[in-house]
Image 1 (cartoon, rainbow, N blue to C red):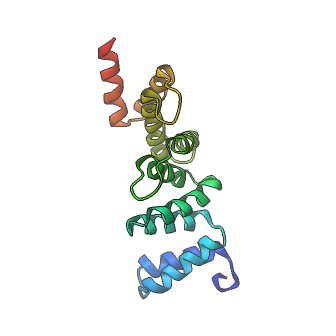
Image 2: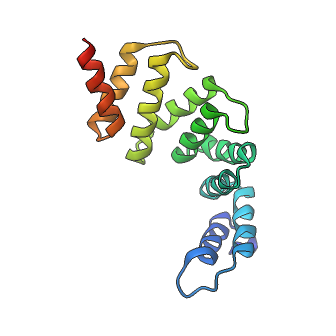
Image 3: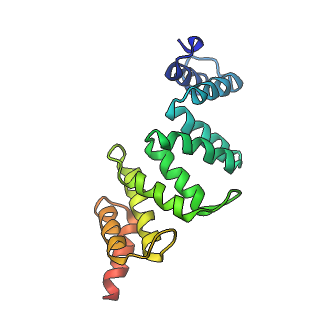
Length: 165
């Protein structure tokens, strides 16, 4: 199926060539199938390719693939893109777009870890007024949501906030 242009099959084949027991590892062929799946529009492959580029320190290319996956609603890609945009690190820093991506990831129901990380990151941006208008009440609301879901940094943030008042 991968050879007939089925994106998910190409992605699975790529994964198999990288990590599956009993399959001869072939990283070059795995990369080829991953790129193929990403170019066919499979969001998991786009996200994985973004991670590969990020690890290779090609932040601009990583952001391109994260953006493509995020546009399809991939929550981890939205979170990774937001962090890349906020930090710069070889690409243009864009706090407005980072806040938008954090907001998208914070609204996802699929993945609690992604959601809580995005909620807290957005809370910090709201608290500091980075890329968004400063809004202490919304910052505290999001920090409390993340803290209630076990996010340690959010818990400390809420505790510090409470001690100031």
